[in-house]
Image (cartoon, rainbow, N blue to C red; front, side, top):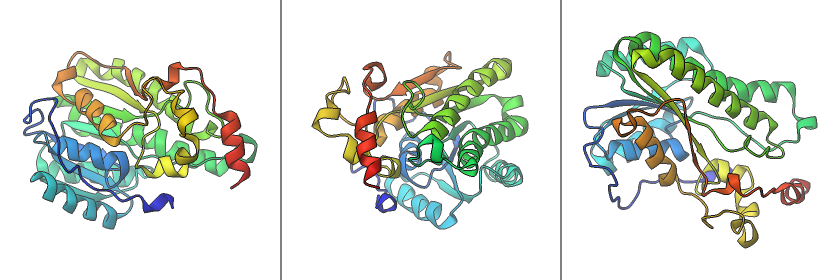
Length: 285
């Protein structure tokens, strides 16, 4: 069921920022063929941006690009690549620069996750999540920095999570990988800041209409009782995340770097744990 989430563009959009906020910009969005990445690409394009969306599955990004172009009348270029493979990443960056002559924004959104108790987590499972999430983020960021950002500046937005903020059960692998990304973001923000490069993170909480929400038990965990543990008392939307990424990717945040913007309705501050709920859910899997 997790793979049956259908990606569709917004039926309408009211601009919080001016419509031409990203006019003339080129954004490279990994994992842009579905879920949150798809909506980030849409919101960017609705603000005048040309989007390059990358994924391991070319058919997925081609289908997504067609939808996005029809909805926004902006250019969307689909690109096949695996963020774990440096040669593919570097080739992708080279192709983007050949085709569009520049890269202004990078959104590292590609990720892998699943529910698993730490004692049953395979060594390879742990390794794979780090390779996609943490190493993939570094691979793309470094390739773009070396090829373009070092001499021209730019903005990097890394999509993390709130899993490690309160130690989420059965998420040791993903939470640790996302924590590493946030630390890396701060290190690179210090090193690359003098070159005009800003790096920030957006950490989503529970976001409906995503594969991750379905795969990680969101529908089962977020009922009336659990919603009461979220200060804003609602589940997040993909647009909530995309608008936050838009802010950090654009010049609206020109003096912001090395920070994490949490988009979770305040739930990370509530101190609530879903351990018992998750144990019950895991026992049924």
